[in-house]
Image (cartoon, rainbow, N blue to C red; front, top):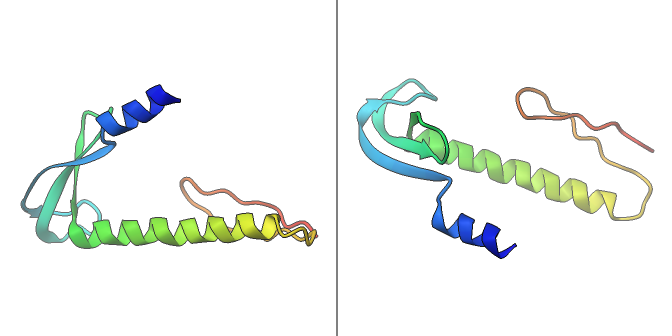
Length: 97
């Protein structure tokens, strides 16, 4: 466990290599973009601050949904809320009543 914590503090998963005027790979607009490096990945992506904020908002939105789902499963009512999503990285859970 201590080794995992040490790894997490020494290596950042996502870093900004540099910034410049260019095209965002998410919205494809001409903007000031950051060249992002992902740990363990040799390629760098470029993203503007607006799209990066949008991704952060999406993480928060999904996190709130997971927290609500976990809370409803532990309420002891016998009902389970369904998570109905699709696309890359999503899953679908059945509704049980």
